[in-house]
Image (cartoon, rainbow, N blue to C red):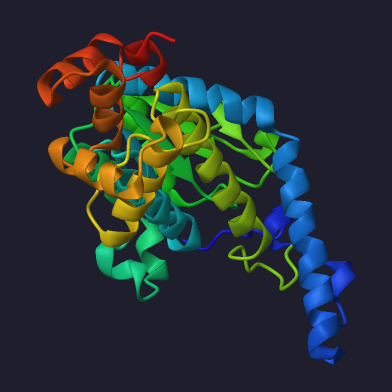
Length: 301
């Protein structure tokens, strides 16, 4: 059923770009860049809500739960992107941060806009993942009305999961706002091209998702300072990064760092504890487990 979305700020006509079709390329880019700056500012206005979302996600992870993004179109694809980046960046299991995209995996590459219209399919996707009270379901819908996402959130609530809703509409105008644990609503306003929420709204969404998983992983001890010490060496680029981290923190040579990585099974954090505490791999992993994964505690700083 068609719904009049003209009241949504994300669907409005932006007076600042009303003449964009008359401009030369550089002038078009200036207008787009100015609007993107508004997206960054909008995220800055809702950092308290983002922090609440981070706390919810960290609690879920500590109880053995998962973060499950769910969205359609650009919103859903950004969830897929963030979920896919967590294992190589933070050494997480692929199941820890997941993403559900309306229309299935093929919708990542070819738009299937009609897939977002079924609340029942959104609920079924949550049931298929066997979501429970340990999990967080993180709905993403720039305009706040996507039935697939709303249906998924309502099913998650029914199952006792924690819920977060990321949208670019004022919470007062979000029908499900009172039912979820927190609404994160960076108000990016009308797009440079009317209704194209892959622009400012997409930029704000990407920023928030980056913040949530990065801050959560930091709180879980996945970094030491600003170094991603929990990475696992699964590619040449990651081996180089791992060697450089070991060199910086231990003062060893690049070659010695490579040897340490080999004996640690390609786990940077394990290699760091092995060398610092002069122990074998099993003992290093035991010390890390005892320290809750925090390198500073395992090192006894």
